[in-house]
Amino acid sequence: MPEITSDKSIQTVITTFDVTPGTCGDLQEALQDAYAQVICKQHGFIGGAIHVNDAETRICSYSQWRKREDFQAMLRTPEMRRRNRKINELCKGFAPVMYDVVDTYE
Image (tube, rainbow, N blue to C red; front, top):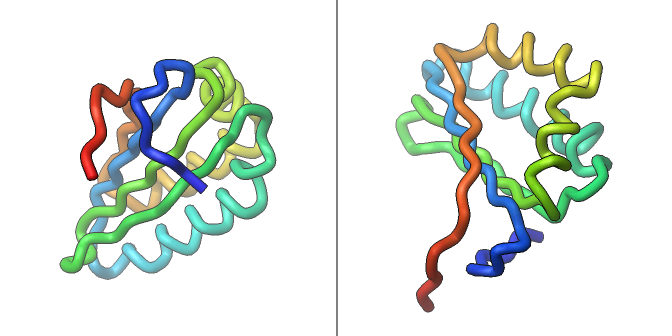
């Protein structure tokens, strides 16, 4: 389970996907399957979540990794390269961005 913390030893990755309402469900299913079958099993994976906006035009995934190299290694696996090609076909584009949490509020 992801925990938002300003602990600098954790790598946070937020990926946004631009979709249409017609492809949103298909992409959501592809992402859920990728997380369940591949991503969650990768070395360094801490947790993640998938978010969909109410208009079904954007999907956002949030994941945490022990270090950035773990995330990069996951992307380079043959299985994720294959899955990312299919994911790319279901959306207008996607961009994974690595972030450091600066501060948290409750």
